[in-house]
Structures are given as C-alpha cells and as structure tokens.
Length: 464
Image 1 (cartoon, rainbow, N blue to C red):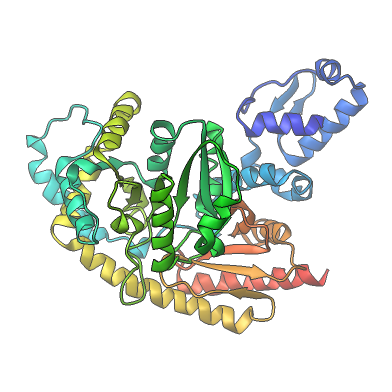
Image 2 (cartoon, helix red, strand yellow):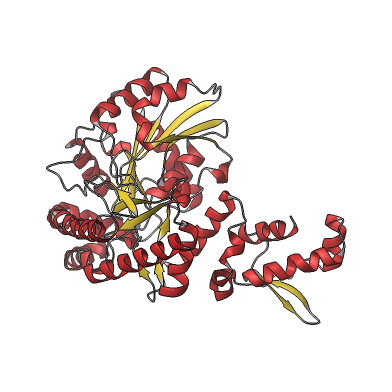
C-alpha cells in the first residue's frame, strides 16, 4: 500500500524528479505503521529505480525512466494493477521510442526512407518564395485558409458534404481529440469507444473523468444491442476508428457503418470518427468514411498527415458542423493560438501540386510489400505459437500468442536483452496475449531480425 502510494505520486507527476519525499517518520505517522514497514517499501522502490536515498540527506525521486534498475526489476511491476502497469508501460515506450539504439518493431510511424523528403523540400522552396508576403503575427484559431479549402475539397471527393468553414486545422489527431474533449464533451458524457484502441494508450478521456464504455472491435456490428444493455442516463458520444484500426489493423464493413450511423442519428449520439489511416489502403480502394453517410452533422471527422507524410509536421484537422468549429477555434485562441502556419503552408503546397497523391500511391505499394514480407516471416516461424489476421491497409499486424506465453515477460526480455521494443496489447485495452507489430518503420532486414528474436524469447518463455 505504501509503495503503491509513492509510486502513484511519481507516475502521476505529483512528485517530480529530484524532489525530496517525506521522511520515514512522517510516512510512518501518515499510514500509522512502524518505520520497519516504511523502510521495506523504500527498499522496494529503490530496487525498481523510482527513488534514491542519499545518506545524511534524505530520499529523492529518481529519473525512473532513465535507469536500468527499472527494467531489471520488471517483476515488481507485474504486481501492480492493470491500469498502473499500462500507464507505466506507455511512459517507458515513449521514453525508448526516441532511442536509436533500439529496434522499433512496433513503431507507429513511417521509416526515414518512406518520408517524401524531396517533395517536402520542393514544397518548402515554394513556400519560401512568398514567405515575405505573409504576416508573422499569431494566426487565427481556424488554421491556414488555403489549406482548409483544399482539405474540404478533397473530403468532398469522398462524398462528404461540407466546405472550408467546417474545417479546423489541428496539431495532429490526438490534439483534435483533446480539443473535442475540452470543447465538446461535457463531464456528464459517457464515451463509447471501440477496444482494442489507440485511445486506450493515451488516457485522454481519463484526464477529464469522462465515463467510458468499451465495445469490442469485433462486436461493433452489434452496436445498438450493446448500447441498449446499458442504462446510461447521461449524454453519450461514440469514438471509433473504423478503418485500419490501431492496433489491430481491422476495418468495419460498410453495412456496420450504416447501422452505426442510423442508430446514432435516431438516438442523438454524436460520432467522433478517427480516420487517420484511410489513405493507406492495399486493396482497390478504401471503404468510404462514416462522415460520408452523415446528412445531419452528427459525425465529427478527424485525421492528419502524420501517418502519410511525416509526424514532425504536426498537422491534422477536424471536420464538423460550423458552430462546433467556431467553438473549438475560440478554445485554440485561448490555449495555443493555432498550429504552425509554416507547416500548414508546406502541407498545402504538397497537396496543391499533386505531390501528396503521387507519394501516397507509391507509399501504398511499398507498405503492402513490407506487410507481405512480415506475413511471410510470421507464416514460416510463428504459426505454431500465434495467430493473426491480414490487414488491408495501415501499419500494423496484431498477433495473439498462445496463453502460456507471458507478454509482460516477453516485453521485458526483448528490451533488456536485445534492445528490441514491442508494444504489448494491454496498453490498448486487450486482455489477451497480444502484441502490435509494425511493418512501416524498420527495414526488411531489421523486421526479420526482430521477429526471429521475438520468436526465440516467446518460445523460451513458454517452455519455462
């Protein structure tokens, strides 16, 4: 209980790195226990790498995400609750994802060779030619007008009925969700969302104490019956990743999209459609967005260029009714004055000259080839220990290991012994032995090396 209390304070940011924690005596008085109990808790937390005792000075919060002690004592973290373990794992992944010494077999972004560097350079040169004509004051909260108009035009081509006044530029899709959480969803809202889901790893709804109802991704076709079983008297909203879901790579059928649209309109349940991977399809075409079925402004459509161009540009958008866009723009002006105007202009030039479409067309072929390569390796080496489905787009293959393979131990072994980083399924809300694999970031050689190591430790793990 005491170790959990201290660990919570550190993980939640209440106690920061370098801060001196209360003395043994104060903690003993606070919890009404003897000092021996406090000392044992302190020793445990020191072994995990969370705190450091300086003789004659006291006990201080340590940089727990930058210490081998944390990883070497992973067994202790297995005793925490699922929620705590998930938050800790996400923090650890975020820390290691920027470390070039690790092999990132789960990373949700394009590898360097897939970034359209030449086309981006051309767009930047074009922007530089008229940059002197621009005002370098604060932008309005809506975003660069030319980009808003072009995004609206492109969305119209997918069957979505809107104009530029329905578009707000954001700093990526997660920022869009955060804006909607603060400016659209009330604290009395119950958010219904598909699981497994990327949103589970962000805890964005937890920050605002919004009630949550999880709907299994494979059961979304039964959406209306699931909701009918809940006696929810509060306002409701649905968050959904309909196309190439992160982390599973699955999509829902057009029939299910229509059923969800129809039910949500009848019962006045707004839909937040996160459609960030829709351009990255490997079949003849992608399924139309749910927003294209919307005739009453019930669907809020969000996406970004992070997955198709480069995450560093931090440009996404929200497509929604004009009144909501005005409200969110006002919130932007009160918080950050809008996304980088230069990044928006670069994206605009990329879209305007068809460079984006040329890039994405080529990208689809490369990603499909990399997906097929990963599937070949899985078929050769994993068929006796795991199962998976073939994604028709996106970045990910979602594999489910046999029950006797401990995913938490596998995660630890790969980090500590091989410097290979995987994303365990429990950070996305999965209760099965699942792992998200990405074919988008690493080279084919690294994909093969990582998968062989994963197989080795998974098999070793199962034989214990």
